[in-house]
Image (cartoon, rainbow, N blue to C red):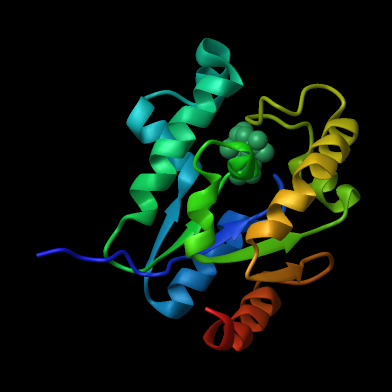
Length: 173
Ligand code: S3P
């Protein structure tokens, strides 16, 4: 018997935009499982994300991420998946097109305020605002290409974001 993976809800967007926080509340509201891609990667590799970057570089990390993405998206039960901000730069980014991708956006200042010193996020380095700006310029187009819907989260509570999502998901996903 063959089973077809359902269309999952996938949260995409930059580091610090709130994908995991929103994803957990959305999954609870929809009563489905929540999966955090970074947690899956760490569990399978038995290493933290900074350790993976240190030993295998960004390229190695993207391969782990692509495997974890393919695994999560092939689940037969519908999930809410929070991805890492760079998933659109990786080799499995095209898989996202088959699912309902919710692009959470925020200003660089909001992102910078939320990531703080960037601890645990090895790509950010010392110039957090500069790096976020450069990454966002490179990724904006890629997020837009796969996004089913886009929500600006600046100054919005998690509950308000989830309510906004719930009102649009049925029509779009
Ligand atoms: C990354 C974002 C991180 C994590 C890794 C790389 C990125 O996830 O996957 O540090 O390239 O933007 P979050 O977006 O959850 O911080």
